[in-house]
Length: 335
Image (cartoon, rainbow, N blue to C red):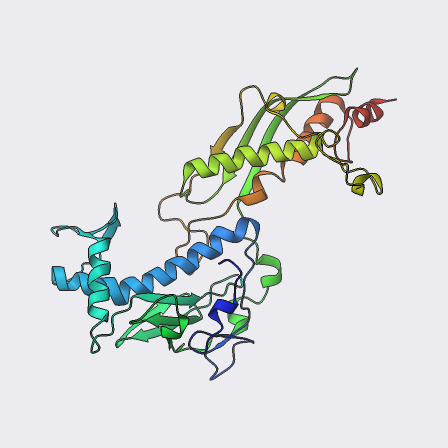
């Protein structure tokens, strides 16, 4: 559903693309944030967490209160259950079933679904929202909730009014310079051997230093790092599309467009060093406690300059045109 906006084109959830204006709670400066590359996790996880928090505060939590009598602030999720000291764990399935049972009663307003819109401009827009006489400050600028009916039909959702206008200049006046400051940071240490007679470049060792925020799934991060590094090597050493018309004649295939193979990767593999985010630390200096970043192509882009620097360090020759083919290496080494 990423980037599909027409599903939300209904009066109960629709927002209008316009700057925040006094008395216009449906206005938002942007309908679709950038969903590309390394900002994906930052934006998407925040929106999902905010929607889930609405459902918990106004749906699951009241149901947990029916079971426990009260819900302590220390309550948390563990292995698919809501747990708290001196309380019997409640499985999510039990809470969800109770929430839908309560929602089916016409005199109850138990939230079983939420649609949120978030807006980031060097800080997340936020406003208070009141449901069932309970008010929470949320880092969103649009909210609709489901009390009963099919959650797939947005017509069943009811809009919750944004209670405070959000001055655009107070969100961030210099967003054009910082909107992508939440990318992952990556550094590479790459060792190469330059064969001065043939011009061939051999990568003999590589270390990646990765600031990925809080790692949600280690195996995915490791796979992305390995794949991105291999793609970076291909761009640096092999991949080149000949100029037109040869490059667009329909016959450019793998026999004429070489890709990196396993034998061309460092013998010991890529050594990944993840820079851990300290407990309690968050990516933004203020606002929601966001700890996750996307890494995407961040693990790929520093490979080329790292190899160029390694070649220059080894030979004194500075190559500036990709890929660093044997022919270009020999030309750079020529007196």
